[in-house]
Length: 205
Image (cartoon, rainbow, N blue to C red; front, side, top):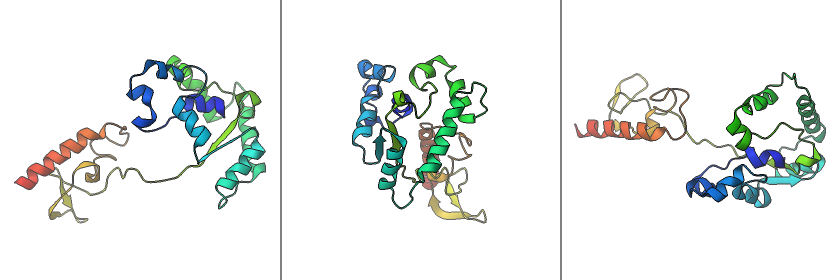
């Protein structure tokens, strides 16, 4: 809903975050005031994959128009949303998502700028309701070709594939290599440079 999108919907890419990339304090303040940041609101209003409606029945109908190949059953969606909303009223809830929201808001910066206050999705004051069609794709392999310490590509039997080197993320350092299984965005550049250096030196030799 609108209340959630104002704080929790993030757009990836520097061009979608002019407040941060441009170091613009005025724009940055939009993240803590009411209302969605400008780029987020623009996507909500004009994005072809966004469905914005005032009630759940119309939202589901709009979602089905956008993706007719996999229609949603309104009664099922309503049941799930109402069950979630009931948990919001229970301060002793064991619902993991609700508990996670409450725990996250115990950290003041997240409470102010990143996590919306727990509320019922079907609360008219929190509307309109918003759905976004997701497109699944593979961004990273987090590995790929097995290499030795000289960035030489290895065959499945462990022998060296003569004359073939791999550098960067395809060299297999992402998922469980240099950074381990919990590698973060923005930390891969060092591994790319390191493996490229090793490959270049080995190739020169």
